[in-house]
Picture (cartoon, helix red, strand yellow):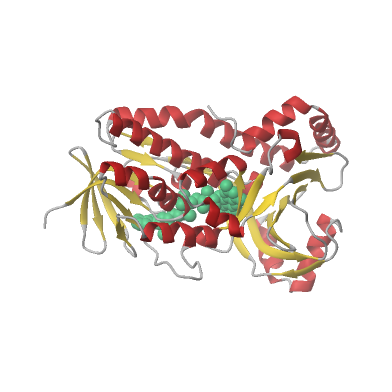
Length: 398
Ligand SMILES: Cc1cc2nc3c(=O)[nH]c(=O)nc-3n(C[C@H](O)[C@H](O)[C@H](O)COP(=O)(O)OP(=O)(O)OC[C@H]3O[C@@H](n4cnc5c(N)ncnc54)[C@H](O)[C@@H]3O)c2cc1C
């Protein structure tokens, strides 16, 4: 059987791979591109597919424009909650900072969106597009070939792709099989996530709190619900998971205070080990690496998917520029264009999120007071604060 030629093969139909396929829709129509998406896990209405689990994601204000460009924002907006204010504080020390959308003159700082709903909307859109959808199907091997790569799928198909996009989350071994190494730092922390119901309205406030055991974030959801991310050392995570609901809510309340009234209910709890990783190569001729396969960061500032989405849009822009110049998507020049667009954003966000984790994880004499003073000063330094907010909102690029 001869190989099936495709212009672009996207390996992984998770948050990032599905977003790229949807972003390519206008190019597929205009240029007749043949795009294949290969996703290993079967999709289910319950969001059982790994990328679209029970987590919610903080979506930066700038990411909204990307979803608008993809034509799915109006649908996503029906289930998002806006973030108007963020309070950053540390437990057991003075000093806090307050970030507000009023300081940057936007209707919100960002939004919180349930991953399962994002998955549903992306896959509804994919179902209406002219793509080759292989699901469930796993790419078992990827081998360089003339002008592209040869992909062997476990459903019996063999593709020849002019451009292959690795959006497989980075754990499949495909990157390594191409000789791309990954630098990894284990934070020795786990993130516990759950939805919480509060007694009082959150009015669009998000809370970020640093404690000696790790960071906690509460993000506003629709109604009186909030998405919790609680990072804890591995040795206590099992015990935290094992607490009954009342004891769990009590443990939370003692760390987060009563600002939102009593925590009323907690949903199912899930745990994720945390590490920072970065592929040593993010692109080659005929190959791009996106999302967690390219870089995974600590979720403390809710930047991982936002950063990946900017990668998606930069790749789409590089492909569009190539097609308009009469070149093919995977050519060396296209990939160089993509890499040039990505590098500084990626470096800055990875560095900033890692610094934040390490700074607030330090336990040295007097460090709590120093951090408190820094938070207080940051609160007063309006231009610096505004610039950093705009960067975190994905509104200050390149
Ligand atoms: C606790 C937590 C909270 C987070 N919160 C936020 C947040 O608030 N905001 C934010 O911006 N980011 C957040 N992130 C980061 C965000 O979740 C990731 O950036 C995102 O999940 C990356 O998606 P992905 O599609 O790259 O990878 P994945 O979600 O891992 O998807 C990869 C897909 O590839 C498929 N696959 C794998 N191997 C193969 C193969 N060989 N063949 C075919 N298919 C394959 C898998 O089945 C999977 O569907 C958070 C992360 C964590 C852990």
